[in-house]
Amino acid sequence: RSGTVRRTTAVNEQTSADGVTSFWSSLHGYGRKLQHAGMTVVPDLFSRPESGVVIGLTGVDLDNMPNLNAMMTRKENGVVGHMEVHGQQCNKMLGSVKGVQE
Image (cartoon, rainbow, N blue to C red; front, top):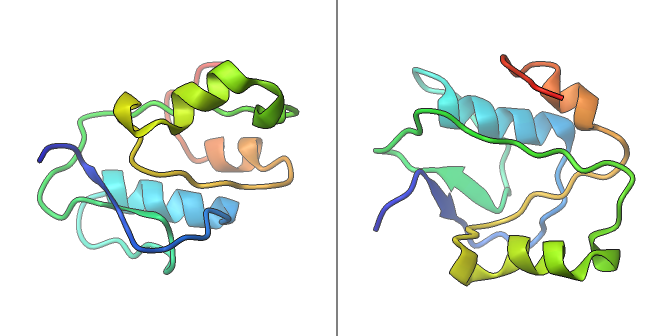
């Protein structure tokens, strides 16, 4: 079993920009960082990533992009879980990330 993120038993993929940033903080931060409750994925307690990649999709509906949707949702592609944030929150979330490339 490898990886730095684990799936939880939560079924609601909806979260807020603050929920996502709390996950990033607990995944990449040092010391004890609290993550919002009820999220579909959590950081592994014993393994931390060296870096991460975030892709923000704005103004698109993945239902209209079946190939991309399938690639991002199939477990055999290494997908652990999803977080879905509605309402043009990409800039708010990426504002706290260092080294953002657009």
